[in-house]
Image 1 (cartoon, rainbow, N blue to C red):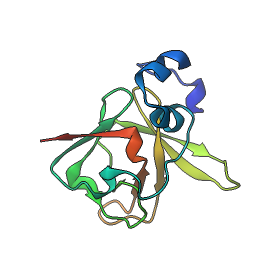
Image 2: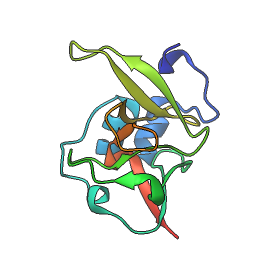
Image 3: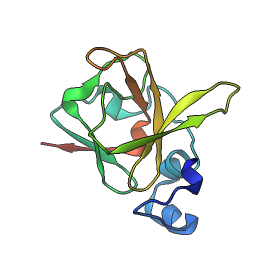
Image 4: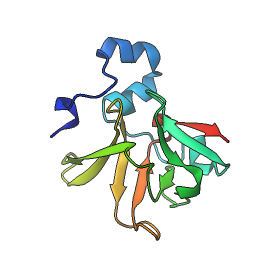
Length: 135
């Protein structure tokens, strides 16, 4: 099932999202955009805390699952249980696994199977789709 056809706990009309998100957040979270690599301060954030959805505030990742992937985007090897969902993204002439917020459906990034142990996953997230909450 595509994200567009799924019902989420938080559902707002596009005009409401535009009022609460910055233009860049709206482009990424609601229109499945991608921020440029190496532009997010969160890529180099390694303090203790939680990374939450910038759209609805749902905690998505903890700092103990973050690692430096060298890609220029914040990367994690595992999300918080139940915090994210995935769909197949067939844009750009390839098939990738898109990651979205389980509560509002906001596009976060993609997950790849080239990450570190223990999961082997690399959740490559757009920093603009996240907010860091220090412990």
